[in-house]
Image (cartoon, rainbow, N blue to C red; front, side, top):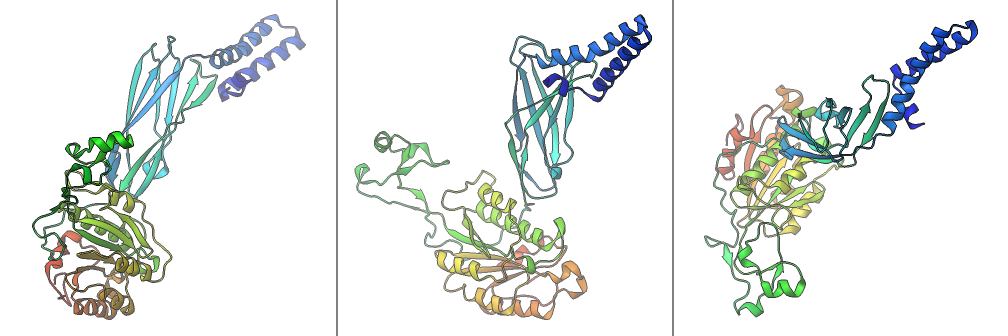
Length: 425
């Protein structure tokens, strides 16, 4: 019955035509027509039996290169199929499952795979939207040479492609106060009494294997490392305003997408300079990249931060209260960078009070009015918010619509000043 359910339109047509020929031959007594009817009926039935009794097995592996792709860039997907039996396969129709955002479903035809044979198929995907996109599972349709029967088999394995925000290189800007408590020396010793007094901790990816504490490793049954001579990593906070009502525009060019890209660029730039960051939104703490939840590559990119921003969505929150509270309770931050949409004077005053002592505050202000109507940009309230933050010592980086963050980032070096016209401070 499985084979009969797998009949294609052509197979059903053959079966119906054959049955009709048999009926006509029976009523008019035409023996030649009877033989034709038997032949036409037997073809799809034999094909269904052969396909249903197929015993060869296939294994599938999928490789994404790279597993993380930036918005607008392409990623390569390589499928590796292996026939693990001693029987050659017939005609295979292969279809991989991809979300609509990555393009149309890729389809391929393999004529024959010899016993123990391997085939590799490559295709490319591209997305203009951020997010985590599942790829797979792979489905294989087994067909007979005449196209009368088609049976579908599916694998269960799937992979995930992470599409991260666009990251642009930023010029180096000296942000005094970004190193807290460390001075020029960024190492410290936790224990000074010798090996027996060292408080070890579990091994984390990226730890130097020379710091493995073998006595504790044997005791706990897992790799443990010494705490002494750990890198003294200064901390900073990155506030991203995700409130829906604080942004304007739709799609990849909306002010929210620009804000996410700006936060990603700033975060990667600061991580490259060795600053441990925690990401805070208007809803509270979103991610902490200084506590081992993320790691830095040689290029200085914090994959943990980018993975979090890849799935950032607008919120229904009406104020920055939770974000400000999270910044205030975090403590130990020598640098606060706030990427803000539309902010009221009351919210600006609340943010202004976060900057005190040696804390450096940088406010990246999106002129959201310009995303809908450019002639409304740089309005009175927007300038008043700048004045409140600048008066409290914040460094103001104005980000109008259509201006890259790299062009205005040097304004972060200007302490407590802003320009009423133009893009500089």
